[in-house]
Image 1 (tube, rainbow, N blue to C red):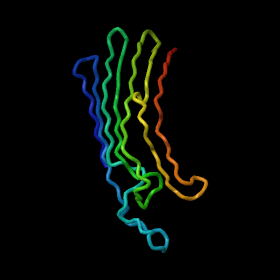
Image 2: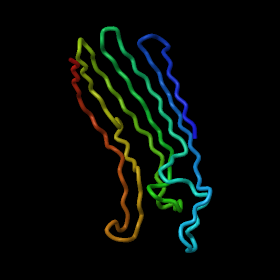
Image 3: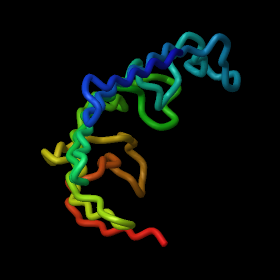
Image 4: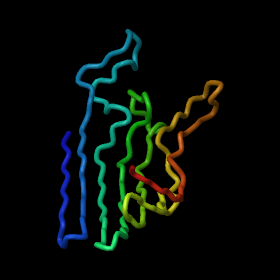
Length: 155
């Protein structure tokens, strides 16, 4: 695997950033028990996306106001514990956008924010097991859109 990150300030109040994560996994030697079909050698690790991307910007004015946004993309991957790499437990890739704006003065920061701004519907885990109590399937949903306001004070 490898991770790359870059930051750039084309003008003093503006900061641009991007990152790339690359990951290639496989089991070199993984045999569980003595049963046929229990050899997972060569399969990918579960919960290990092949790549992740992120990019964003933050603008901070001399007067104290700021605005920023970022986008994050995660490649599809095998779901939790799925060492046999079954297609039914594959989690599709997803992209999420976050944004924030606010104002800083003296010892205070007021921020309005939106996480998952476009309310992307995505799963982070999938289990398609046909045994109770999870029959016939379940998925762990990613965070839905969240909009909020924070006030921070430093003393």
